[in-house]
Image 1 (cartoon, one colour):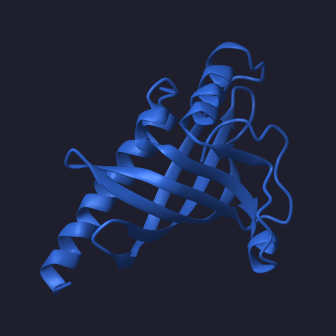
Image 2 (cartoon, rainbow, N blue to C red; image 1 turned 30 degrees about the horizontal axis):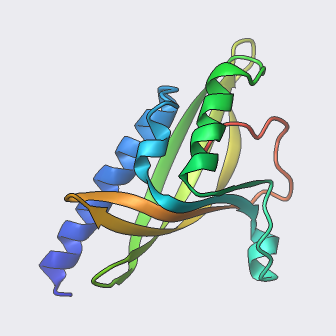
Length: 160
């Protein structure tokens, strides 16, 4: 891939990630599944699990059905203290840009504000993503969010 093609892909990825994060920041959970393929894997896991080669995480969704179910649960049945979340992505890297799958990695930070408290860092880490093109749009085939925290805060409910 030449330099200008790589730059264009990075810009396209950045736009994709920014739209993804805005969807979640604005609590538009009904739109969240639209960012994934039918056979997508979505996982949130810890750094130590990844280093040990363990396919474990507190959140695992196998396929769009589980992702849709998670979105529906967040919208309609989950009870949690009202909060605002802001997600920031940086260091967008193209690891591989094959003809079928694009492998990318980003760093992320998520901040949480509860109504009666100061904002706090909720989670930091990185993503390992595999994306594909469908109808000229990028979709996540695999999203593994790896948190650097030693432990996760209570209430890991909302997507990263």
